[in-house]
Amino acid sequence: MTLNEAHAGNVPPSPVGYQMRPELSETFKSEKIREIINNVLTDTLTGQTYSAADASRWTKSMADEISLQVKDLEMHHYKHVVQVWLGQQLGAGCKCVARCRWDTECDNYATAEFKNSTMFCVVTVYGLYLY
Image (cartoon, rainbow, N blue to C red):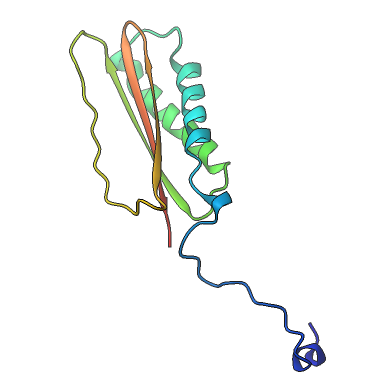
């Protein structure tokens, strides 16, 4: 824009400098993330038997892979946290509970689970909108 255009009143509107809420196209993509989680769980754990020695490696690699794929979705104003629970199937029950304090209009999560005869795994990705 030239100085003459600015003085003539032909000033283009300036973009909003501070965004309080995500645009509809920028919201947390729960369904896509659930699909990512399911794919990583299936690829990593199908055909495996629970082993305490392998559990630590599996949880770290799944969390890292899910985190990388979520970053590729380019949800620019979101910070995400990946939580992986992996345990042995011994017939007892297990409850995984989370309580979060967040903005219910912007923040969200996606979760998926995997079970076979020897283990269970629950993965949750939390998406927190940064103001």
